[in-house]
Length: 627
Image (cartoon, rainbow, N blue to C red; front, side, top):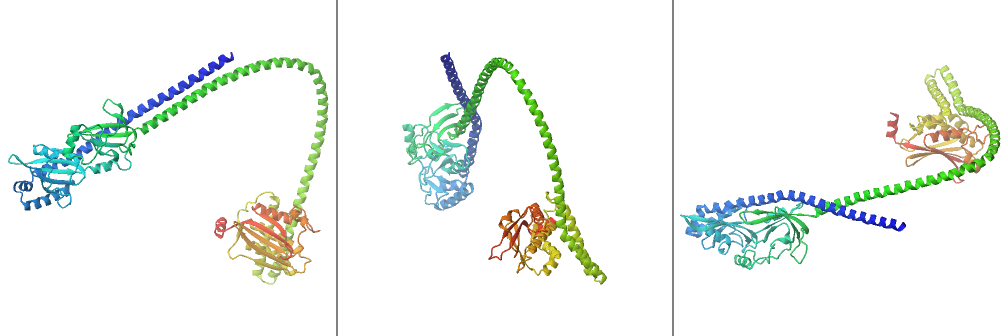
């Protein structure tokens, strides 16, 4: 049974692989065939276009020898052969050639000797040369139009020779000829971005024009002995060896198009810009008996076919995986049903055992119910105790808030009494301006009292004005209005070092004043028994933050108490409430900053140093935020 299953699975795997290979091969063949047909359909009109273009270019130059044959000056030269006439006709031909852009135009006598030529000034002048061996001369002297492509004997440059007979009185008295260079056509074919390869062959199958440099002056078919003899007599290709190009035809279409494999005849190399398989479409160029062939590389066709084969393979793989998944799922379902059957049998056996244990469980359940009742009674007692603790916590919080309000309102109230008494005295004495100034300060103090009460109520929340900029010197100056009397009375030296540029931080301005008040008051209390009483305020810029250092010459903070100094209700003074530093730290923290403390060394003058670190803003940003 097991061996039969293995054999069946192996046969299924082999069949699947065969189907996968067959589908891949078919997809490759179908995509290649379809892409090849599309390329053939597009390439055929392209070949016709190139053939029409070359035919139009060549026909443009057909009129040139005919025009020369009608010239009276040319006829006079042939009839009289006067040296003065030669110079005149040379200039005439030179002017005509400059206008039409041919390689050269010239006039031959009936013996094939050139009497006048447009290139008479050049070292390779045709004047005096005998070209009777050229086919275009023989064709024209017999009364027809001569056409011949070859390499120039004098210049060594290839071109198309066109000739016409010159008749006077019904008799041929000479030949008018023009040589046209077709190299510029090749250059246009070789321009960057050209997608096709092109060549032109003459009647003997010799490649005379080609976009592939290695293929020019090669043959596509073996030359017969007669053809070679004729080319040598006509000196058509001079010293060119005309090697044979191997281009086996792999397939031929109904319209004559072919698929061929192309390689270079030069030392067995693959042709540059022309390697591998090509689709070739040819068109005849009448009346020259030339043929132009346009070739398109089949690499894109093969790429499309490979992509199609790969896609087919992926699709087949997805189908195969789906089939395997379905089989696996069916197997899992079968196994699950078997497991359910086994579970049912086990469940029946379990019911019997459960029935046997039911009596024991009833007794246990009764005991558990008694324990649950006892636990519920204990939980009720615990909830009552927790409710009393919560109420006690609420009362303690109310007491803390009252103590905080008392601590924070002491100094503003004292200052309020002082300024109000001064204002009364100033009004009595008629010093109105000074009284108004005191009343303005009293208004600010009342505003500060309101802020303190609202800030204490929202102690755990971020204030709405913490994102507004506060001018540090301004906040410090307002703080000193409250403390200047104490500073003078206790003879405290106060040194402040402000930077030259304006400085502002992101913090509530009243909150910053409250922080300054608490820190400076604590510093004065710490220096109560010091011989030297000095408070130094310095400002340090640290990147995007501003650090305000407030140092005193007091007794400092015991090392064991540094970590507790900011805890609420923690104080080292008998009359203190321990809320000043806690509230100050909360204000700075709400503004996104940090309030820290350290003990200064003996070299620095001893005492404590508090550091306020807040985000700073530029003067322009401060003005924008205030706006």
